[in-house]
Length: 99
Image 1: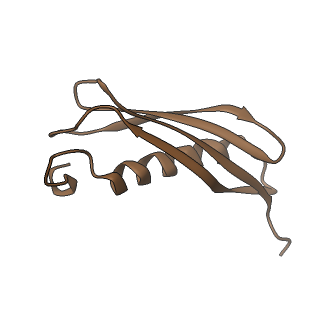
Image 2: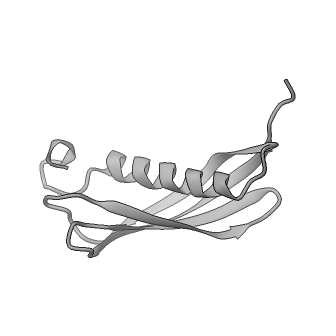
């Protein structure tokens, strides 16, 4: 974590965004069949507390899986298991091209 900390020691925005985008994308993909894939439409990420050191982890779940859009959310916790960020997103369901 220390290599990715901003000078003010907040969880660097890009690192937090990448973590929730990757996690929510994996969650969205997990509810699709083999003929579909997904792409991020939008993500909202809210930082609640600074992270000064240690590991962070994200817990992700699918709130609603529709035919065209999957809606996951995420909670990010620091090494003390304190909630430091929340996120919601929308992912488009896309049919895989025939090969």
